[in-house]
Length: 468
Image 1 (tube, rainbow, N blue to C red):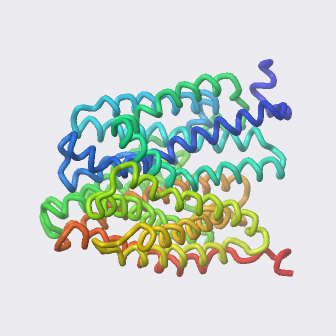
Image 2: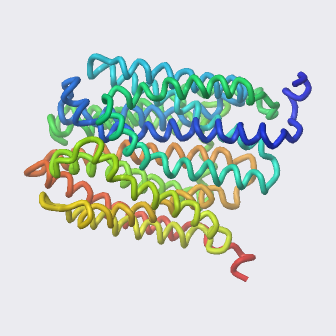
Image 3: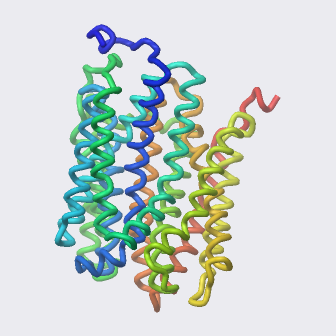
């Protein structure tokens, strides 16, 4: 490729090359989404192996999701400054190295640190995949197909993660839930170096809002740390109040930075003037909180109450993964006719029903009678939500804000998962028994999905052409 083609809008690549680019981007996105949930089934084994206490165990999940969410907006700027190829390769390299470090961890602290570094790498990879796809597939038809496949990968990643985590933990060791990323990451590095080139997006003159990225991440971490600590210290303790108050102060600085201080803010506050952006982000925040909680607490219930092994617990998620994938693809086809609002309302209603059904689990529940039905219902509901949330959050926006809105939705989903899991874990810890705490958390997750229906009602409705 000549220097001219690498620094300007590229010509239409051959179908084989674009297919490989799509495969690389989807595999990279699948890997980073997978690692949100792949550790869930392994948590009891990890706790025994490294000596985690009950409140600290959720940091194996939250260290990843907080770093992922907190740096996602910052990571989205890197391709503008350093080029899509270099950014993509760097993110994969960081993620792969952190996976190796986590797999070798011999202490709880080292594993949490490795998971946080993984999240940082994921925050670079995820927006880079969108940038690569958007600049490779330039016609409406090819771009719609590429983003449809990418969206299906995002939707299935969480459920498949639980399945993969169970199989790897049961057949090999919990360490392989991290080691498995190393050969995949190496292959992706080789393929991406061959097929991903740089293009001039016309935005290389922008600056990096480091203070914005740091303040967003530190503020969220302080809030989650304060919530997690309530089990040991109580809500009214100095420890909790200082952590929560510090988080609020740091996040207030983030808002000030975005409004007044940053030359190129990560999150221009003008984006929130659009009602559909606010509605979509409230929906995905609540949806992330409910879904992350389901994976975490249902996994613990299956293993610690019903006596499932890691492999059986992972296989229990297979129907959910299938339902979510089919629902996401089917909902994507319905979007042009029905609009995001109908699918969001229906998806959240099904999610609430499924979670409420799971909250009826008892110590004598069977898979067929107590787990299969509700997880399939949740999968159908979440497939509809994931397929329509991004469209709802970007509808009617100018092109120069569509990418920002998409990145915001990704970050909000991760934030909802991290904060929701921390809050529900604190509530569950105060229950009279572990099993009652798990089902209480699932019941509250169902209520969260019901509350989100109010936000979904404000999403864009049926397109005018379809309505007519």
